[in-house]
Structure formats: C-alpha cells, structure tokens
Image (cartoon, rainbow over all chains, first blue to last red; front, side, top):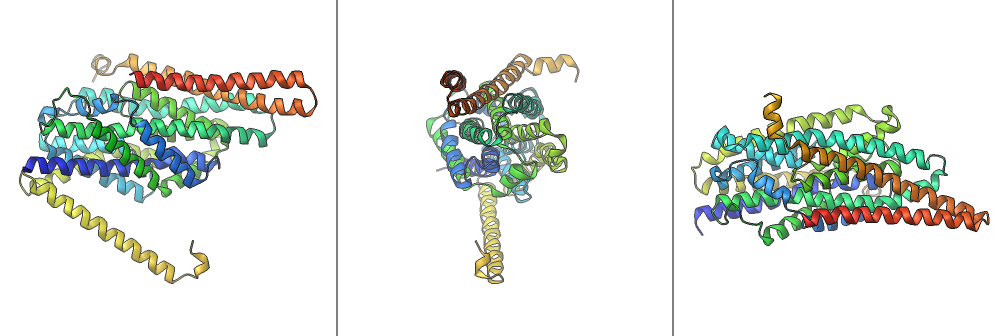
Length: 373
Length: 83
C-alpha cells in the first residue's frame, strides 16, 4: 500500500467516524419531538430512528452527487485536503455537542472541506456557484420554510380538532408521531448519510480510484448507512433535551406538525440534491409549531443561540479545516501528516474519555448509592 | 452580486418546487391526519350514544383520511426512489 492509498484509507475511516458523530449529534433532530410528547420512550425512539436512518441512506444519491461534484473542484482536491476538512468538521461537531447546541453537521462538513481547500489550493478550487446555489441559499430557505409549514400545519390541525376532547386528540397524534417520526428518520438518513458518501466519493476521485463520473460504489452506501445508524443509536442526550423541552413544551399535535414539516422539506430538497441541514429544518419546524400556538411559548433566547450556532458553523468549521490542513502540511505532503494528526486525535479523545470517566467516578463516590441511576 | 448572477447560480424553479411540495405536503398531511383523529373521536362518541349511522359515516371518513396519508407518503417516497 502506497502513501496515497494509506491517506485514502484514513480519509474513509475518518469520514465514517464523521458519519457516526453526525448520527450521534443529529439523533435529537429525529427523536426529540417524539420523546418530548411521550409518543415513544427514549430508547425505543432512538432504536426506531437508527433503523430508519439505515434504510433512508439507500433511497437517493442526488445529495452525494452535489457534495462530490458541485462544492469544490474534484480535480484540484487531494485526499489530505478532504482529511483536513473532515477533522475540522468533527472538531466543530464535538464542540457544539459539548455545549448542547444543535448546529449543523452538514454545514460543518461542507465548511471544513471548503476551508481546507481555500488554504491548500485557493479560491479557484471552490465552486462558488454550487456553494451558493446548492448549499447557502437552500440553507437560508429551509428552516424558514419548515417554520412556516409547521406553523400553518398546526393552525389547521387546531381548527380541525380544537373542539374535541384533549385526551383522545393527544393519543391520536401520539400514534401519528410513530409515522411522522419514522418518516423524519428516513429523511434524515437519506439526506445526511449521502453527505458522507459524497465526501468518500470525492476522496476516491481525488485518489484516482474511480472516475469522476462513476456511480457511488455500493460499499460506500452500505458503510455510510451503517455508520450513521450506529451513531443515531448511540444518541445525543444533551441535544435531545435542548430540542425536546428547552425551546418550548410541545403537545403531540405540535410534535406531529413539526416532524411532518421537517420530513417533507428534507425529502423534497433531497430529491433536488440540496444537502440540507436536518438540524436547521427540524428546529425551524419545532419553533414554528410553538410560535403558531403562542409566541411567548417559545424560549427565544435558546432559539437565538441556535441561530448563532448556525451562522457560525460554515466559517468556524472552515477555519478549523484550514488549521488542520496547515498542521498536516507541517509534516510534508505525504501520509505522515494525516497519520500524525489521526494519532493526536486518538490520544486526545482517549484522554478526554478517561478524564470524563474519572470525574464520573469521583461523583459516584461522593453520592449515596440511591442517588446514582 | 446583482440579481442577474444570482438568478443564474440558483435554480429558483427547483427551489420553488421544494417550497410548493413542502407547503402542500406538510399542511395537507397534517390536515388529513387531523381529520382522521377528529373523525375517529366522533365515531367513538356516536357509537357510545347508540347512533350507528353517524358512527359509520365518521369511521369511513377516518379511514379515507388515513388511506390518503399513507398514499401521499408512499407516492412521495416512490418519487424519490425513482429518482
């Protein structure tokens, strides 16, 4: 195995790790409303979402084509650039996860790759038209659209069921949330797993392993589907709390409307190859469903924090991607840089996990056994 | 960047399709499901009151609404799969 192939293997592994963190990070987008309204218990909701995420990854390949061909110039890209972009995206994902902010994994990925490309090759290798037309404009439209659709939908729903007894209405919409949550999970798998497929495809093209016009290989589809499903199963409990309860308390009709709005926006956009942020879309739906009932029911401060995270994601992940590319170049243009950075990441993550486990151990020793769940 | 370049960069037709499909699909599906829920509740109420004709009418409406929801979902996913 040559140096280029070794970097390709590392890129594929890191891309799948990103896909895992994407599923982990975005679990909340899919299951928070079902959990918040008690349509499903948390573990069942997460398992259900993971299975449908896996299935969803096989539905379409339009978004993978956009990421592989319409954002950066595939001919000017190297596997090291993609590696740096991925690491930048993962770093931003983990930072926003740590602070409980539902920012966009998708925009982190695209921002990371664009940032690394800008540093490595320059602006000429960034396809501005594709970036604006297929990423930035849809990114602005999608959450507003989900907000409006969810708001209109819940208004219509309240008009139809408003005079009925609340108990049966709640139970009916809880039942409906099994379907709307399932479709949302399917939509999430469809749009998000494809971004990883697109990045792996980009790496395969950059390495000369496949032709620029080749179809996405089946092993890429299966591995991306598996990684996002495993990540989703592992869950992201901090963000579930933010979306599920801290924006506003939802009833089951609002949960159904938010999930329904999110699903149709994501599925429609996926059909046209737009790599949307599922986080933005479902957050827009949740806020829209809350605001239509009562503006003051939405905790606008938290919603505002989420907007700030959205705005920061592309440039911040881009900056991280650029910095990581600079670090890898300190070790030359071969495989040494990516190997060293990968080892450094493994060491840092292991140290963080050990520290976390030790702090949990200290907390357990300091509390009576009955308080520890 | 003026409106000319933006018009060339962004496929406004596709974006408009996304907006229309989302509005019709999102609001339509919720309305259909709400009709199903409301009709199912009316069915239970009328059956309890011993009014089988009204109960039968509402259960029919509920079933039609549920079938409409399922058909819309299957159609939407079918369009995506067929590409």
